[in-house]
Image: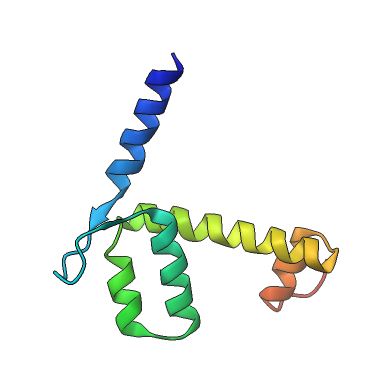
Length: 98
């Protein structure tokens, strides 16, 4: 039973991967690599890198990866600051405390 679940999960992950089409690099990127590179490029306002990394995986996979990265970042900051994740998220977005 676990073998079938593992095989099914592997198929889903592999379906979310695409190969970069620039010819420079032939390896595949997973959605978490794509999300990390995409968010870094956005933070640095590097439009060329944003376009490149957004092509590594499907838009749905990239959205999932960015969401997962945001959740992990908020949790890490909340632990570091000894605050709730909600308070940290609101502070990062410049929203007033509830």
